Amino acid sequence: MLWNDPQPHDGPTNMAIDEWLWHHATLPVLRVYRWSGDWMSIGYFSRAALVPEGRAFVRRPTGGGLVDHRADWTYTLAIPRGHAIAEMPGAASYELVHRALREVLVAEGVDCRLTGQDGSEASAFCFDHPVTHDLIGASGQKLAGAGQRRGRQGLLHQGSVQVAEGRDGMRALRLAERICEFAEAGEMQPDVAWIAHRRVEVYAHAAWNGKK
Image (cartoon, rainbow, N blue to C red; front, side, top):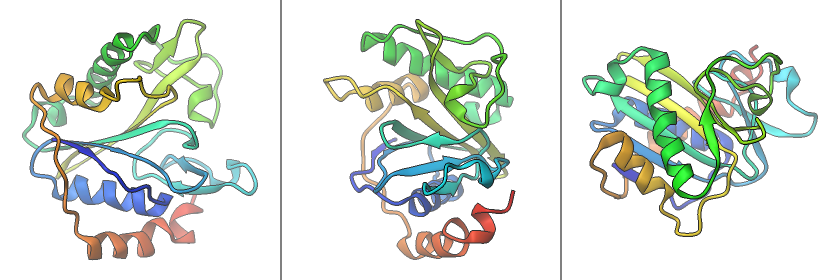
């Protein structure tokens, strides 16, 4: 299912919604969403001290580095257990999603390819350091990366694309079709109380965001 979330949210709310999908989706869901304000997100294992001074940030439940969301195209995949992608090894599911994303971007006229290995320059900032199966452009700049987490409920994949959406606005549907083979756009009805609780107790809490 494709869910184009129409309402921009702050960082803690976006993370709480993604977690709700991860725990409660009964079919694969691709959520595409926006941010209310100038947010960064940091990976579960990232050091909060590396966030630029004055920037609002939220810690993701998935891995990866620091991501600036002011001008990106942000998406999340929640794949329940029992579906093929959720049962793959991490590297395989990461590659599958990014191969599908590459096809979509190439159809938009973006020259890009998958990396074959980790970049040589280490960096806390996600888009300064390509890793295996990330997408890079013709000049070697990283265009798309993601973080993943697995649990008994399935796979959570949170991704960022540093390329504006194509003119026809069909990126989300094309990506959903390539990943799930059949995709239908629809509206989710998330549990507002559950999300509000997780937002306050976890994603807006200093103990979560500053713990590393």
